[in-house]
Length: 240
Image 1 (cartoon, one colour):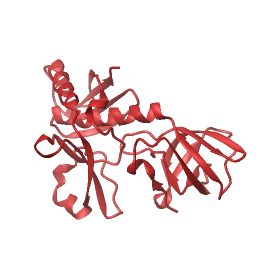
Image 2 (cartoon, rainbow, N blue to C red):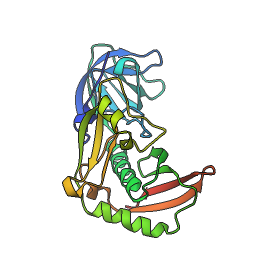
Image 3 (spheres, rainbow, N blue to C red):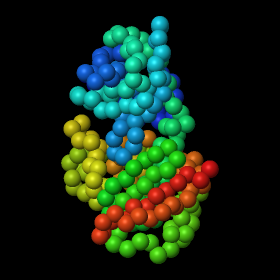
């Protein structure tokens, strides 16, 4: 069983119908099409709600299941909709939009700090990237100014697709060494920030993003933590 990822076609879609096609052994709900992003690539799964004729439950998160399916994880003790039920899915938009803004901002953070990325995490109001960075940045405020300037250019955020073979021929596209792009479908999604001469970033990513960088708004760089001899963790906060 596979699930059509509606969030990939339109990250701004907040409500959509679907059919229950199964349940997992862990009590997850499998739909034929999902608004809910499944946890992966450092980005948490979406939460929200699921309604059907005779019931409604809250969804805590979504995770990847076997065969390309997405399993919605209900709150503990919830009565599950039966297989074949027609449901209406609604995501927690505040949470999703926060993920979109933070995730896009982290892509830009990897532009102003052009070092190997060793890990990352996306939240609804903050996120972080780990860099192969022996010494902490000497001028964090200057980095913040450069990052905010990129955001304020209101650059278009778009996607493109390449084959796995093309990615193997261009390994420099992969910035995060600890998270490899999902394989198996024969093609890889690229997220592009800016167009033509204004392009500032292009990297594989399966997460959700804003349509233009201006939607990120104001940001603030937080603390820089030492995580090993060669590793520094840089935090980014949405500031309004």
